[in-house]
Amino acid sequence: MTWLTWRQFRIPALAVYAALAAVGVVLAITGPDLVGRTEFTGDAESLYTGTMLAMYLLPAVLGVFWGVPMVTRELETGTHNLVWNQTVTRGRWLAVKLGTGALAAALAAGLLSLAVGWWASPIDTMASAQPENALWTRISPALFGARGIAPIGYAVFALVLGVAVGILLRRTVAAMAVTLVVFAAVQLLVPVLVRPYVLPATEEAVTITGENITRITGNQAGVIESIDVAEPSGAWVLTNETVDPSGAAVSPLPDAVQGCMPAPGEGLPDRQTVVGCLTQLSDLGYQQRLEYHPADDFWPLQWIETAFFLALSALLARFCFRRLRHLS
Amino acid sequence: MTALRAQSLGKKYKRRWALTGCTLDVPAGHVTGLVGPNGAGKSTLLNLAAGMLRPTTGTIEVCGGVPGSGPAQLAKVGFVAQNTPVYAGLTVDEHLRLGAHLNPSWDDALARRRVAGLGLDTAQQAGKLSGGQRAQLALTLGIAKRPELLLLDEPVAALDPLARRDFLADLMETVAEHGLSVVLSSHLVSDLERVCDHLIVLVESQVRITGEVEGLLATHHRLSGSRRDLDTLPADQHVVSASHTDRQTTVLVRTEAPILDPGWTVGRLTLEDLVLAYMSNPTAARPALEVLR
Image 1: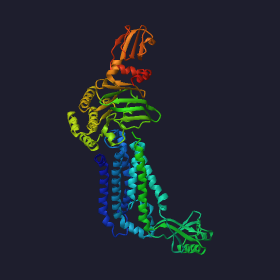
Image 2 (image 1 turned 120 degrees about the vertical axis):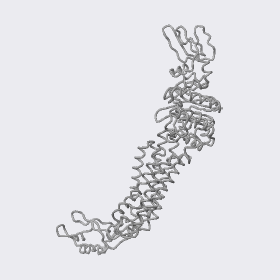
Image 3 (image 1 turned 180 degrees about the horizontal axis):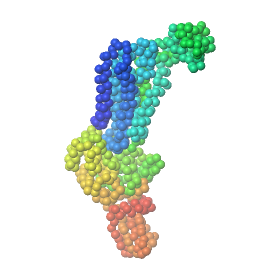
Image 4 (image 1 turned 135 degrees about the vertical axis):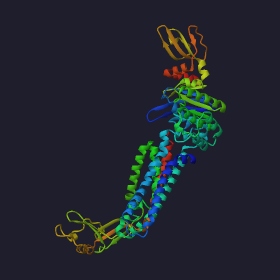
């Protein structure tokens, strides 16, 4: 069975690994240039975007081009009739296919993540050190799925998802489309609905001083809706909100400080004056509440995320095996 | 020894029954023809026997086991599905390697000899073979696995008459050599006439008649004579089909006893006549089936 699986799988497998090798060469050539730099613009920036894209596309590609055809091609060409009548049960047939595919997918994603992680480490280090780059720390939602071991979980999940959808729909093209949509939906929903809650977030009440206000958000009528205070560097901040003395979030800010912003037409606001005015909030008992995952949570979150996707894959695989008995 | 035994076997697809109340006993060591019009349930029966499908009702036992129940059972049954599927991207040689890798009982010498005898180029991709060559390759995979029972679903449907004759002749040779049981289906009786010694006629999802070809031919007679009422026939003569003109009556009857009435001209039947009579007269089914059992 291993021989046949390899014979059928070698072309798609080699195609993906060849593409990965090409990416690896580009990263190996450009990587050493980044070390020691503090400005990443031009080529480095586009390459950086490219690596992000590659990290997120790879699992989808594996699901669509490795996972889906694995079973649908047999069903569409009728060759399942041939292979299921050799001295190998369908269960073993699927186990070998799925096992080989999942291992190859895990390896591909792991290698790419390793290469990208190495290449981007100067950028990641800089982002974690600078609070104003909080969006680009490796724990932030945008990067989390493109670093560490989570991509391995995504790749295995996408592959098994492709096989499962293929078994369900029995049509290659339709199954490819559905796999892509479902995988994208899971990728979008997990960072919002699952990841923030799998570990208890660090909560902190911060006194509002003039210096730590980093952002003031107002609406068109000149009402100040919210302010942000400085966030710990390298962290993934979930909430940054003003709370009243009883601990309830307030938005817009109380009337007492609404006069801090000059009305439209009264000239440009002066930061010193506005910020100074806003510190009244502290005197009134208002505080800023921060909720975040510190940079140290990165690896625990990675392990949990990977385990979560591997568990989803196991559930899907179970479904595949159950469903396989009813195929003909 | 029975190769295949079914007890009130039935298979229902979403809404339609493809096979109902099928009770059968196919003895081992025979070449059994499964005939019936398109859509009669031939493929369904063979797929059930191979374990590709699971029965909705009843039971089926093949070579003493439940079809598709495990490697041991799979080893005993060879199945060449309709349209003789092969992997288009694999060469003939790779198909033989596939067989060798997937079957502990694989007879590589037999497979190589057959492929050489058929003049197949082992380096050629299976997708580029002709229909007849593809069927031969699929059959080779089925035979070299050395099963006890070989199930062939319309193996010659896609072949021209010459390839059809060669395929069947070759199949017969192999059967004689290895003593395996074969069940093959076709909607053409003429294909089966030369090779089968056992017959199952399937019409509208039901078994119409089953038995040994020789016995069937010996017990069926075509009687023609002056026009008369069929009620006048002896009780042991079962009418399969009847037709009347103004002056003449022709009936096809099934009886164990000799025809004694001198008013009849008794004609011999060919297998095709017999099968067609059963196919076109659904009502004749029940009594015939009961008597045979």
